[in-house]
Length: 320
Ligand code: SER
Image (cartoon, rainbow, N blue to C red; front, side):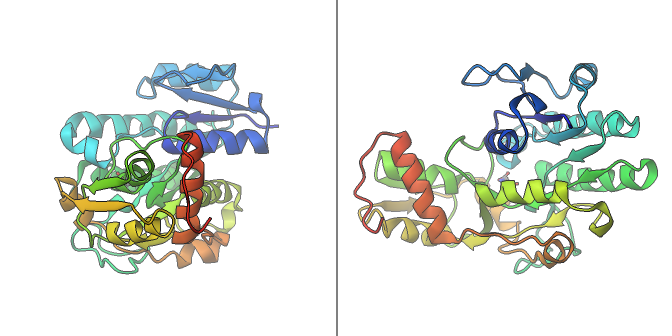
């Protein structure tokens, strides 16, 4: 019997992670927490401001938490609008948990890193695990610093922290909040609601992405892996599917032939251009057998099916 705490359980990844972990364990073993209230009442939800060290400690003690999934963060585009505040939040929430790990109150921690740790001088195609890292966004700087700190806490205080560099995550249950890769989620909502979408990234901007079920699987697998096999002590590269807005639009048109896209790049274009196009994840494959399952077409089909149901729209999804 172990008890798990998800911090940021109402966020894009937190929502799906909560469902999956509660399937795997039981509702009462997986405590949900967030600064915002959940949409539906949940007896195992606790209101938590993750920047409040005392409040975090209290929840960990009260529910006798063994494992923490720390999913609360300010994403790339939002962080650029409030640099100092975002840096403070992203680092403070991490230190609050690392310190409890150092005290031995928590046994295992998952903290997500991101492709945002890379920067303009990083090789963009098939970006290796170990390479130049010169992030130029507040979010990327906080993730890279976080990676260095988790490695430090492992080495000096034997804290068991595991991490993967998520690419852009695509899902239908909950919208992402203020990232650069958000276009790849918004496009589906707009395709179904309006039949058209204006992309804030230019048509040929290729970025690494991943469908949510793969991201959840990676998260759960890295937490379940035998610690002795984990040779990367910072965060693992994990890859899914790389595509451009134009390629995604084309993949949507297979099912919605009348869907239209145009492009109005904004400040997020520069962020996207500083990130890799594709990721080399052979270390994750070697150490914990990571392999993504969804390709572009399978992801698009699944997204359209779920979202058309969510919007109660009967779509003539040509190929489905
Ligand atoms: N999806 C994130 C963002 O765009 C990257 O980790 O900020």
